[in-house]
Image (cartoon, rainbow, N blue to C red; front, side, top):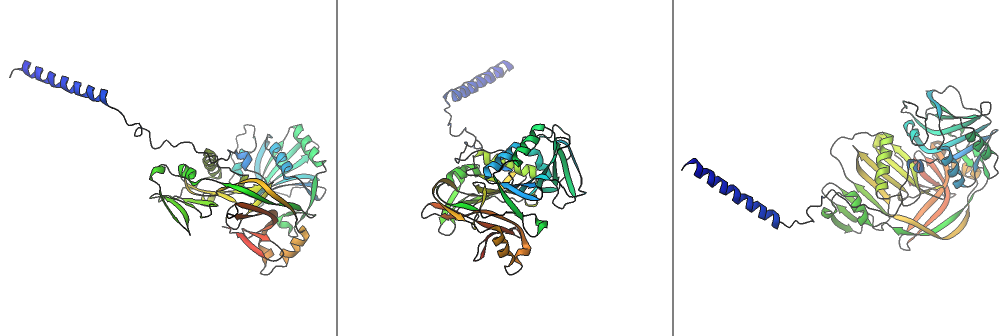
Length: 431
């Protein structure tokens, strides 16, 4: 067989292959359900809202110091308004150093947060005018703003928790000074007193406080929406249910539990690798983005605590400016992360509706509460870290209502305890 014959045969074979492939290409009908990548997850909305860091990092109380007396605005909404004004201010001449003496001044604003915050978080709620700052890792819980009338400016201080360090800066805009002066001249204040152990710096309203007891309906968040949020491929999620555990949705490495009464959910996705510790800023950023992605702020939540040693972040439910507590962990939204991956997510599955009924409740005066807790057995008062007014949440699934009852609460060694005249019932465990 000569070379020309071989070339002819090879050419014919190539032409035949080309015709066959062209035919297959022309006649191919793709299955469009197969070409949609599994990683593309539809946007999920659980009917809440998105929030910013400034909206989440809120103080528990703002105390006005005026010639040795203490005051706070009567309306929590007015306190929120003042704080939102303050966090738009620019800080100048910011510096860190050892704390040499106690802050003194005739007029002083003290902003108190629910728990210690890492100093690096300050960048989320103040403008530092492009200052190149290397923030320390120590924590603060209070921010103090003093009037410097000689220089027409305000000085701001962040004392460290251990009292050894302080961060100091100035607000140099004259309008800031005038705003603070206007607040000090207002009449809508309640006077406060200090708890007898002054080292704790617990401020309590001097006069009796009356708040409404709220009965409200609620709507529930559908579990199938959370399945889309938490599982990369919802089609492979298995389901089971029992009277004890409620509904379980699970894959080989993740599980979502919805309680039988639909009140809350617990998601866990354990990891085999070692924990990679995240900074407070990283935990806040990842958590905020994740909850915003499914519009998960279904009620008024604010930052309660960031536990960097556990990669855990916790948000607290509030109502009308007061924290809400529950013996069943129905009032906190909590996440745990590892290496930028969500491994735990606990949250309520209800959304508060408009009130059905309100009844005014007169709470015991603070002096009565102080006397009560100091006379409890087992050195109860020795472990008190804080005392505050809040709401106790009662979830009544049979009637599909929630009752919010105002009461006094004490932080006793990290545990939130309702203080009443008959007994002290532990509501929420600490670390």
